[in-house]
Length: 162
Image (cartoon, rainbow, N blue to C red; front, top):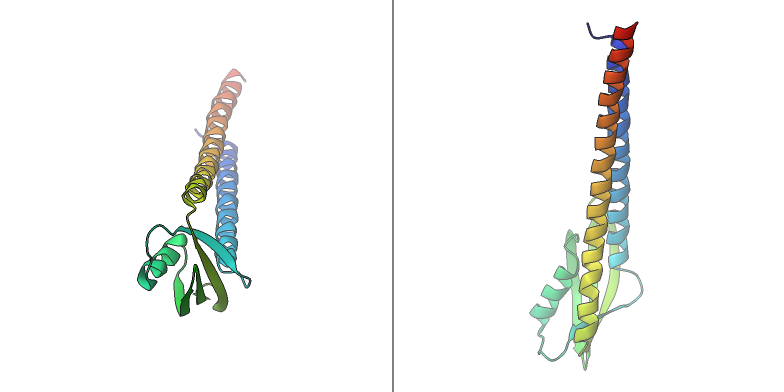
């Protein structure tokens, strides 16, 4: 016969485990929202693009939309190309808070292939950090399950010895 106290201990351990999981997920959602707000700041942002290729307005718009895939609704108000600078005024409507964020992105067309190559591993590092957080969370869940199993056998042996 399974003791109710043993079942309650297991349930509490699993609830603690899922509570920790949801704390990690809430933290991740808040971090994603902060990234979304930092993408289009009020001040100018300079992004380096390889100028060895000739860019037209459609290509530049594609570059902007691929800067971050988390942009939901991005409206380009105006786009001007002057010498080696591209000025884009954008408006973004954030679906969660229904706020409208307006900003101006200034692209500097320079031959910065090395700088562009250096930016790619940073995104990979962000992805690896997220993978590390997920691995940590899985390890925590496994530890709680192992502790629950060990506690079950210890409690069962103690009960049988009495």
